Amino acid sequence: TFRLYGPDPTVYTHSYLCFGRDQALSRLLAELVQASTGLLIRHPCYHSGYRGTLALASLYESPCAPAAPPDLSQNLTVEGTGNPGACVEALRKLFNFSSCDGREDCAFAGVYQPPVQGQFYAFSNFYYTFNFLNLTSKPSLSGANATIWEFCLRPWKLVEASAPPGQDRWLRDYCASGLYILTLLVE
Ligand SMILES: *[C@@H]1O[C@H](CO)[C@@H](O)[C@H](O)[C@H]1NC(C)=O
Ligand SMILES: *[C@@H]1O[C@H](CO)[C@@H](O)[C@H](O)[C@H]1NC(C)=O
Image 1 (tube, rainbow, N blue to C red):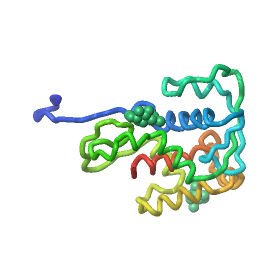
Image 2: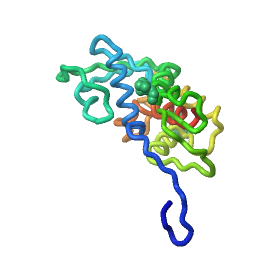
Image 3: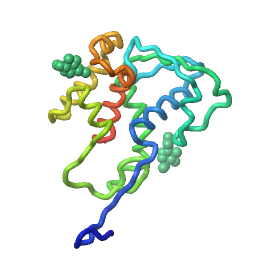
Image 4: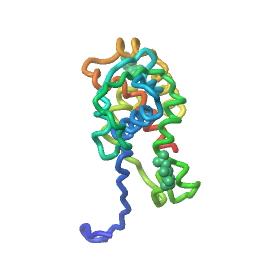
């Protein structure tokens, strides 16, 4: 409870550290690295035909990262497989929904969650992602789901060819972001 111009409101707040979009996607990539035997990672949330490299060390800079392997000097090659179903499965594991054991007062990661009501506000990455995917005009849930899946299934070549200018840095992550948002808000 705190004082705010008269009546003292009672507020519940919780910050889910390491579950924000950027950290979640970085943790997802680190999980894929740990599950693979070599330095070629097949990523279900990246479009088929996508291929990129990144320094292994960059995945372990955040306190949210899992334990780092001993040799961080190597580079990884990441290849997209464009598989939204497998991407959602991988995201679900990150949220650890099962740790709530079906309890109503728990949303994910075993953290207490009181009943929610009223309007929801989502901003920053949530807006940029849905804006990029043309989903800001209140689509139905099934419509949003279909649009995001269809986008994830598009070959990388087509995604690149039809991207508005200035999107290069974020382009490969919109599929994962869209599925992350759906998984978080729906489940
Ligand atoms: C999921 O949550 C349970 C209970 O909180 C915990 O023991 C387990 O390690 C978590 N699993 C992952 C993958 O984080
Ligand atoms: C969003 O709509 C614009 C205009 O119709 C289109 O050019 C663009 O490809 C769409 N974006 C996606 C990700 O489908």
